[in-house]
Amino acid sequence: MNIGKWLFSSGVLHRVRKPARYIGGEYNDIIKKPKNKIRIGLMFPDLYEVGMSHTGFQILFHAFNLKENVFAERIFLPWKDMITEMKNANIPLYTLETYTPINELDLIGITLQYELSYTNIIHALKLAKIPIYSKDRSENNPIIIAGGPSASNPEPIADFIDAFYNGDGEVVIDDIIKILSSDKTREEKIKDLHNTEGFYVPKYYELKENGAGFVVPNYEKRIKIRKIKDLNNAEFPINQIVPKIRTIHNRAIVEIMRGCNRGCRFCHAGFYYRPVRERTANEIIKLSLETLEKTGYNELSLLSLSTLDYSDLETVLNKLEPFLKENRISISLPSSRVDKFGLEIGSKISGARKTGLTFAPEAGSQRLRDVINKNITEKEILDVAEYAKKSGWRRIKLYFMIGLPNETEEDVKAIVELTKKIKQKTKIKDITVNVSIFIPKPHTPFEKERFYQPKEIKEKIKILNEVRKIAKLKVHDPYVSLIEALLSRGDRKISELIYKVALEENAIFDEWDEEFDFRKWARKINELEIDTQKYLGKLETNDLPWKIIDILIKDEFINNEIENSKIEKTIDDCRWSVCTLCGVCIKTGLNNVIAKQVKK
Image (cartoon, rainbow, N blue to C red):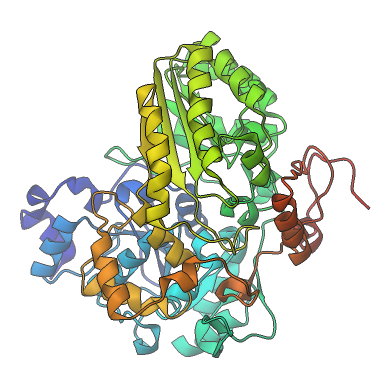
C-alpha cells in the first residue's frame, strides 16, 4: 500500500492524537530526489516531540544532507494509537520526508540518548519488519548503527545493533559515506566499519566470563572515541526544522560549546564529552542571528552542558542584546553553574523570563558536595538564592540527588535543612525540590559504586517528606531508577531481558512515567533468573562490559578521583585552574582554552 495515500485518505490522521507527528512537511525540511542517492534514516527512538528537541539529531540530519550524494531522512517512534493503526493496515515504520519504509534504506542510525529507550528500539525494528537480532539480517536489510552517550556501554543491546559508534558524529560522516558508496556486500561494509576508528562491531569479538559473573567482550585493543577538534569548522544548522506542533524545546538553538570539565564525579556527560571546545563569540553571534532569521522563533537558546562557563559570554550577550530587544526575542541559558556571576549575567539578558530559576546543589551537606566534587559552598547557594529574589525571580527549582556514595542519614536531612534556609533567606513562596536517585554510570569515578535498592530509597524519602511543609517535593521513582541502573551497567545477558520485556510484556515508552510498569520487568527478571544484585551492587573488578570503549580518560585519573571522593577532596575545573591530567587533551591533541598553567 502507498503510505502517503494511506495517511491522507484512510482517515487515520483523524483517529490518532497529534497527527502532525506523522506527516512531515515542516518549514525548512529537506527533500531530495532519492534516485542515485545513498539513503540514510536517522532514528530517534521516541516520540517526534522528543526527537525534534534533540540538538544532535538536527546537527546530523543537516550534516548528512549537505552531501550531494546522500539523502538523510528522519524516523521517530509513533505513539501507541498510531502503532495500532499501522499494524492493522500492515503499514511499516516509514521516513517522514518521503514516507519510505525504513527497511528499504541503506543504513539506519539510531540515537542512544538514554537507556530506557531500549525497548522502543525493539518495537521500532519490529514495526519496520527488520529482523531484531543482527545475526538474522540478510543482504537486503539496512545496516543498523547506533551512537550517542548510551553507546559508551553497548553490551546490553549488542545483539540487536550491527555497529556502534562513539564520538562526535560530524567527524565520521565521510567515512560512513565512503563505505556505503562502495560496491561491496552488506557484510563487507560492516567489516569496513569494524576497521574504522570509533566503531565497535560486536560480531567480531568473542565473549568471556570475567570471574565476577559478567560476560565481557575479549579484545586486544579498545575502541577509541573520536572528537571534533574545532567547533568553528563544524557545520551547524541555521535552517533548523520548525515543527508544526509544540515540542519539548520549541526555540532556536545554537550550540556554543561542547563538553564540560567541572568534574562532578557522578556525571556521565561530563566525562563522555570532554574536553570543552568553544565556538568563537563572533561565530555564535553570526549563527544566532541567521538561525533566528531562518526559523522565525521568538526565543533563542545558547546551548551547552554549562553555558555560563562559556569564556566570552558577556561579549555574546552584549552584542546580541540590541537585536533581541528590538525584536522582542527572549533568550535562555541552560547551565549547571550555581553562583552570583551566573545570575548577574542572567539579569542583563534582554527579555529574560524571571518567573523561575533552576539550580542544582545536588547534595544538602557540604561533606557530600565535596564527595561528589560539586564545588559550591552553602554560603554561595544562599547568596545566589538571595540575589535571585532581589533580581526579580519569583520561583526556585532545586535539584538534589539521593543514594550517592558515602551518603548518611544526616546528608539526607541536610537537604531538608538547606531548603528551609533558602526559604527563610528569600521568603520566596514557590519553591520546588526535585530529587533524583543516583545511578552509577560507566566511565565515571563512581562507575563501580552500588545502587541503593528501592527499600533503602523509600527510607530516605520518608526523611525528605519534611520538605513538603515548606516546598513542593518531587522524587524520582526508585523502580524506574533501578531498571535504568541495570541497563546502564548491564552485559550481553541483559539483551534477552530487553527483548522479552518489549515483546512479551509489551513494554514501550518506559522513559515516560505514566507508561513505565516495573511489574513487567520484574516478571522477566524472575523468569530469566537474573541476579540483579550482581549488576547493582558494588563492583570489585576492573574487567567490565563497557571497558572495550575508550573515552580517553586515563585510568590513573579515575583512580585518583575515587580516592579523592573517599577523603572528600575536591578538584577545580581545569579550564580555570590547572590541568588535572585526565588524559583527553593529550590523546586528542586538543588544548584547554582557558587554563594557562599545566601541572608538571
